[in-house]
Length: 414
Picture (spheres, rainbow, N blue to C red):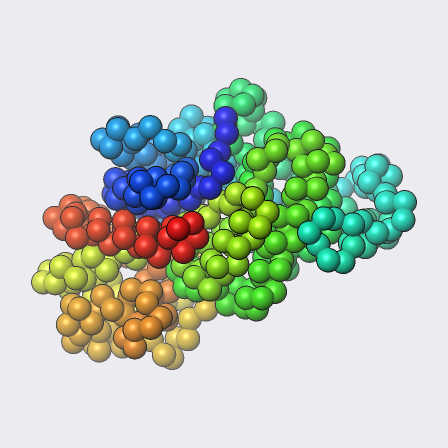
């Protein structure tokens, strides 16, 4: 099973926007860009919303059937491990194997020694086409890399074998994720991570490293854009060399997690893809849940009042909602508008505060991030929230479609 060269992981927490998301992909196709769409949802999100992995498969299949879509599409078991993968086995054909928790744990000494012996570089310097300076890879550095990452790759291999044993060979797409860590992987580390992946027979099609800077949920990239651009380009070059040296799948590509709304790095990603003829997987593109809120806000009346109510409850439960996402949000709590202030806003003012338009003086990145993690509050509304989405389906769907196509697909590909 092959993933398209360019693909989007379209998160959809409430499972109501499959048709709108697919329409954005269709618009890209009509403009000359073939994109694969991957519906993704994590175990944590299922637990909060009260859905099952099979619900994501149903949403995807129904959207594809209704649109008579003939292009590539997949269902991602997002950030799985051996403790939760079994629930995703039947409905999923894309597995994001998350081994971040195993980084820094050492493999047994014999495995470490074997790895260093296999990949020792005779002259301590590895020249990779496209990277200005050779990578330093002496045995001491290689040992440090192995001690940090080899055990994590071994765990990825164990998870992959478990999935393969249940589903069969070549029936799913494999991604290895190492992004939820404190430090980014260097190009040298990525090269030998890929060496370990190849050594353990994982047919990885995308890899999600930790990049420099912060990839906070629902807002723009925070960090040194020039440094990210160089790092992204270097990582593409590392992948190309690793594919040649280690026999990894020829279509192996980078995956950018929490890639939605990272507008400032999209030009660099686009340049690097063009320069190296490389693919990319952008995950969680579109921030669908926030676009639903914008659509409801613009509807006014009871729908806008519901959004204001969700914000008020989220504001009152700040610590509990933010704690699970502490590493991927950065909210100035003191700058959050009081719920009474938000209640007094017009519905248009509310929509402008949420919409990620940094040129708009009413845009509020703190409010947007709090609402991003406040989907649990909407989930607690149950059918009332879903009914509101259904009532305002056209307006909400337009927000989801246009956000994905205009703010994400066009800057990257058109």
